[in-house]
Image 1 (cartoon, rainbow, N blue to C red):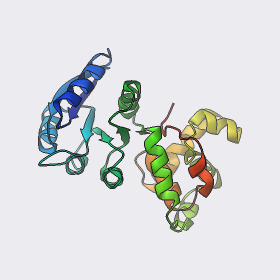
Image 2: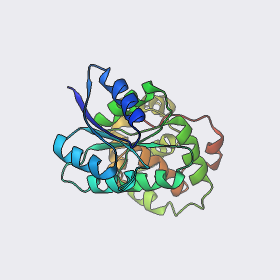
Image 3: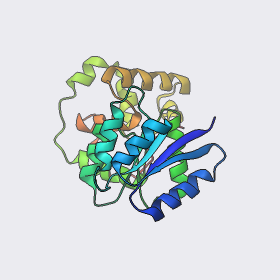
Length: 228
C-alpha cells in the first residue's frame, strides 16, 4: 500500500529535499505541498493523505495551529512535526496538539522515512536528539502523582510503562520481563487505552510527568521511541 504524504514548509529548498527523499521510495508518494499552515490544512482536506509532515514555524498559520485544526477532523491524518533545537516550546505544544512524531530538520533522511512508515503503522517516533531534550525537560519537573496510573494499570502494565520510558522496543521489554513479545504488545495497547494516550511517545512523557521513570534516565544514551 502506498503511503500518501503532504509536506508543509515555508522554505522551497526544504520542501524539495523532503519530496525527493520521500518520492524516491516505492511505498511513499508526496501528493501535496504547502508553504504555510493554512495551505497545509487545505491540501490535507483535499488530498486526504495518510501522513502530514509539518514545519512548526511557518508564516501566517504556523505548524502548531495546523496540527490542532487537523487533529479535530473526523479522520485525522498522522502528523510529523519538524523542529529545530531552539523550538522546545513548539515541540511540547505539538505533542499536546496531536503530533505523534518529531524530527530535527537536519535529521538523516533514513530517519524521516522510518518516521513516516512508523506513523502509517500507527506508531510514533522521536528523533534521538529530541528524545534527550524531552527527557531532560521532564526529568527536571516535579512529578505529578502516580496514583492515577497505579489505580488504572496492572502491576505488569506499570512495569511495561517504565520500560517504555527508557525507549525499549517490544522485543527488548519481552526479554527484560521474560515474557512473549506478543504479550508486551497487548500490554502496551492496554495501558495506552486505559490512560487515554494515542502513542508510545505520549506514554513516555506521561511516565516522566508522573514520576514513573527513574530520574537517572536522563543520563542514559538516547533511543528512538518507536515500535519495531
